[in-house]
Image (cartoon, rainbow, N blue to C red; front, side, top):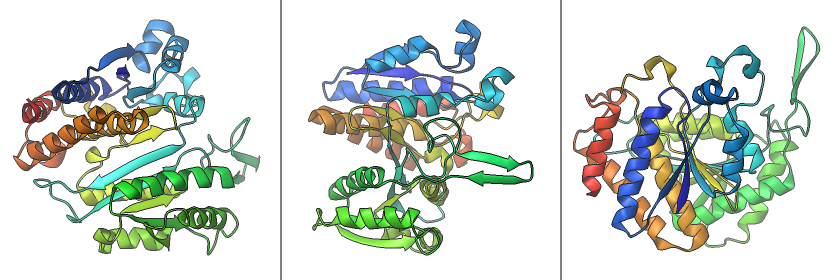
Length: 351
């Protein structure tokens, strides 16, 4: 399995190698060989070729189905690059990575606000209110006068239907419940369309229980009784906010795994940022990216009907859980281990 490896910025060069090392160990256990393909992005690429996302990197990704993307610190790029789409946004658009899957579950050994949380947020990733995703040309935000700012939100039947099918397919493999999250009482036409299309798709999955919640009520219910929920499907902005909330309820944003996927390509990318304030200090928490890489292997396994990927993903998740339960933790979780040492602790659970 050829897998692109993009370290990125900030803590990326510290956490990406840890995630890859754990993945290689798990893959070896099940007879799967991972062939890493290193690719440049971010500050390193700017220094080397004068571009945060070189054409050579994109050309290589054209020939790859899976890759690990480290975080980018576009705010720290030279001024001439700050007005562009971020590298992650360029990659997401180029390969139509329309499904953003963000799980949140509590781990034994990690203090959690809601220890019984175990949800998967399936976030539509190609449209909505995000200004970089809703116009063919230009931005979805604009100012007709210096004192008035407007934003365009886009919801389409096609995008709503395909993300709904992802959510219901995932629910089939979990606890068979989908909650459609919207704000149709106020955004009647846009999120109302999203809700209605999701409920139409639900008819094709009679074995899956479906309900719906307004996004504000959903936020409250995640805090109050998260165990009642399994898969949440929602549009872009709501999914972004709810997934950060869910991650913190589970213990830390440092645990927040994520993949961005189309039907043919997928990218492991932790939900957190580059944390430039602790870069180079061996303090970053690699759990989110380790778990994101497990999700990547699981996605590949499903697409190619090769159980080795799923088996490796199970090993990775079990190893992370065992390491945390045994007291191994980075500083953000109250522990004393550095990034590399935590990676060793996880890999020892696999070996």
